[in-house]
Length: 309
Image (cartoon, rainbow, N blue to C red; front, side, top):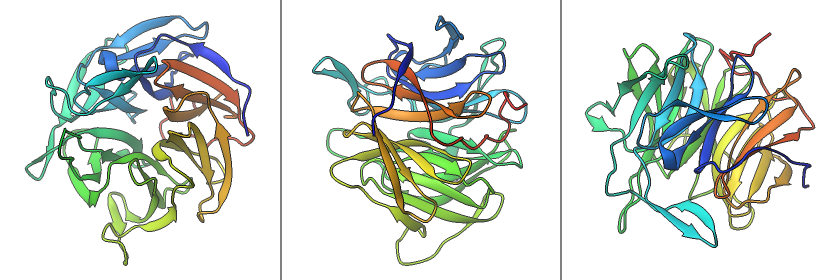
């Protein structure tokens, strides 16, 4: 399936982490510029904040501030006219979780480590209804070695960070089921989607046989990698997919629903907006675009969505 696309903005430096803004419009991170960019309803761009490093996934918290996973930056290369990441850069600034005041652009660093282990490449996050958030650490890739990543839980006041799953292989997208009873994690390099049952906020149940303790929901069909994800109102998981370039839709029981092709091999993220949450906003990162498309089913409204009616 291929959808009708509307270009919202272009000339973005590897956009990711789209979030709907309370005053209208949408914000994206520009990983290669180290900034968060506001795009108004007419497509005009302005800098919301400049945290530096590599701002990645973003979500609004219960205090109305924007929380950002900062991966510390990438090296970059151009392949056939497309901008793509190329591992850990010489000026890597370290992974961290940041809080951004959207009215002033002030950036605060909340977490840089967990249990004495530095965060390497925080990638994506999602808030539960209790005001805590789950986030992935993707790790960093260097010329001859790569970090094993993990899944974490933290509080937005800086008082608690907890490692839930380690190791994982380049964990990327993270999302919650509509009832907040499962947390989903998509791994980039393996192209696997995992589910973990939530026992209580920040506590998950692990089960064999896999060492990460998760339930395996889906694996790759052909050569692809998984990036960030969003969840539909009915519980389907929509995973932005690299290489093939598009959105893989997987039901909560692991059954394949559909693939929506996109004109960029680095289709990296999706979020839902509009009054009925039936508009998908998708980042096409290597060509520097944010696009929208009508979606056949409504998205699940995120906890602390500033656009909530």
